[in-house]
Length: 559
Image (tube, rainbow, N blue to C red):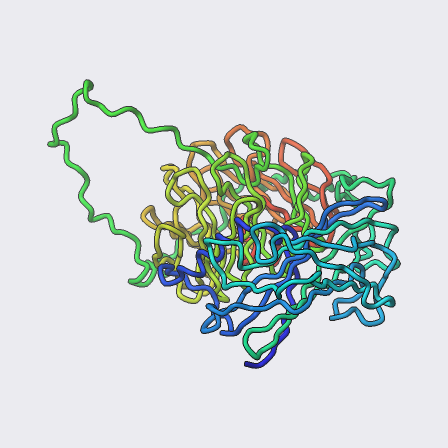
């Protein structure tokens, strides 16, 4: 077996999440029953390492931290035990390299001289001596204080013996002498953790780099991420324009050649299904079933459950989720992570969640880790496809024009290279419908519902929503070239105009109707028509959360 070393950038919160990790492993172990395979991993014996320090710390702070080593062997080696040989960490480093050569900052953190294995894990109750092994970098090493070596068993959903988790304490002595991300508040320092293990005669290691933000003792961590330019008033480009009452241009007129149905694999259901005739005897009122429960409406980006869309961003630079009502979380870790907020547990609140394309994995904070996807063309399309009030894990696989919904199945819908997935409840039955907007022809295809020509300008961005409050998703586009919102059968409005404007429709006042809104990235300002203009954001890596990820990934550059 060839020795190998891998580097992973940890998603804050991934570590120490036994329940979430078990969910991921359960899906790995039962992959034969999953119709959406994740990307194949190299069949090797391997380990994964994670440092669980606070993502934000303050000078003078003391607290508890953990380091953990997982048996992540795959393929033919998936049933192999691994023996832990060594663990090392440089608590403060200005680069991302193994050992932090020439870039250590020994004085920032102090690590306790001993650590204790968490009960129930492979090293439960064992004591580790934590000693300085490189004074120039501040590297410390973990050494067993006697006894037999630590053996970590293969991945299992029945036991936590498949990883070793060590508890320790730390203190923050001062600000780091460097800043890895000067554009962010506080001083950012890197923690470099690595471990070595063996299986049989093969040895292998794993390296993990995490980022910790350190603030001065007098600074709190609740300062909102607002730039100084965010207090600028609305520019004149957002003023209503007299041309807003003009009908849709001819670019949205239906064209005979563009309304052709999707290929036979994706053809919509025809209208040949005969309706129930009136000859069926009506049921008497004495036996009539109770009325169906009201459809539960999921409000986009409603993180506090008040029925209103929250002004919120995901900042890729520090993996922070910033909600204007004061909620904050660090959840993410790789540049490719895609925020996919939704109500995954049905409690009426949007959960912090992201989809990691490189793993085909969904990470939902405090709930679960699910492998669903993994193909390079997969686009996450979460929605409530079965109407149970919970957001379902789903991907649109562009390479095959197939929709894969976890727990429900897979079906083909789409196929044109310009197709943008636009799931929504277009018939008002409380279930998310499969739908695509075909940019090449400006045509919307909704499975089992119908097809309409609406759009067609190269700058059009699909912005479906319930703009009239009838409980159904309306077909709509934001035409960036004219800053005009065109909502089918409802109306047209000019709102926006700055080249950096991103459409962020949502129900910002809780009246049951989708509001017209833009996030102006150049100034970090939100403009919600008839309701509010407010600064929130402004960093180049900020992502406005109300806009669905599928549209953000697929639409023209403005989104």
